[in-house]
Image 1 (cartoon, one colour):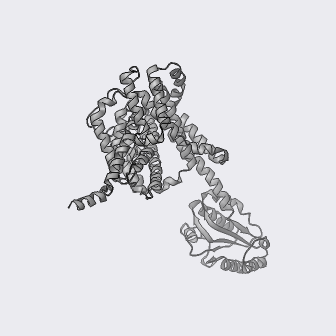
Image 2 (cartoon, rainbow, N blue to C red):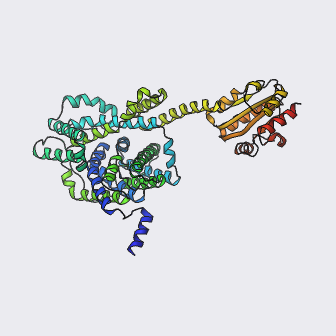
Image 3 (cartoon, rainbow, N blue to C red):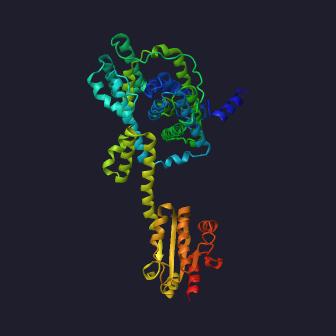
Length: 548
């Protein structure tokens, strides 16, 4: 009976009990790492330390139960926190709208999973992700410098935070500065052997809290943290704020999707497993919806916590569930102690997080990178830091797409072969060459090969010279592997050009998917059935008969 119940539970949630010892240790270890990070991300978001813990609990629990990456541990991350901070600042006069945005972002992630869009995340260009992540790292660093020296974090954006740095550094709160610098040293220089036993953020958290209690009482601390279970926050909608809610929810969903699935790929590499992208998005979306409903900040698959879980033996969703339940127990029992944690400690931890988020690996490769890739990355980075996260991603994707389209256009045009009076210099079968030679330039062969798309559609029509002495046009699609609407319309333009000059058109590739698409889109209405041939040789024979 118990076995049957376990199998049903596993079928619904993915939880298994075949690695209990490893999952318990992995979940406990991940929770220890998650605690200081959740507190720090909560404070950095502007919502409060408890919101970071709620986010870690709810996203961690439901992403584990319903997600598709068994060993992944989810919770607040640097990129998601920066976006949430922007959202919370924008809706400062109506916080319920900020949490509505989180709920809607989670719902969009669920929709992405249901629509099986997980595989398309791979299409987001690396340079866009690199620039965005580096920009996020820079934002975290800029925002956390002032708290490191004992001053409040700016609530007016990155530019204001950057402007406040000289004042914060020049007039530090001594106690906070000492604790912050010690924290920064601990999280940066703790030996790996020690960090495997006790995570460096936890060491810094304990030392900093003891420092405030015993030696440095003037350092600002977190302060009151609510206890007990959170109260639901009902979604709120206003006409004036709807456009901002939808845009912000979309960027949360997109960023959470990218963040989670990249971590899933890392987990696959380490464990030798294969995650289910769409199921993972559903789990992440459910977690973010519940987090938003109960006042938690949004989260995603967290690389550091996932790797800690795997190294400690976690292999199934049970480890993620245990991680969330341990955090829930800590919230219930240790909230009074957490109130004494210095803000400078959290700032020091986040400065290291921001530094690690910056894509130093790509930056080291800039000297050998393509100029177009560097341009996209730098543009996204600058827009992320100085303008707007949503605009940065949008502009980056558009720039990368246009650059790729230009490159694809050149590649596609190389597959276009136009043969007229120059038949002698073009390699082809002897029978085909003989037919063109006999026609003496009265037949133009336009040969398409491979896939054609909007990238080259306009250029194709310009590449085909004006018809002068031609008495028949052969459009060869027998080697085409794919056409989109734009390329279909470019072929239509060629057919119409010939029709306007009363030049008959013969099409090769009858019965192929490409020609079938041309027929469905009514491109070949002016081409009689006898002028639609199965292959190029047959089409040239038909054209030769027309010009004889």
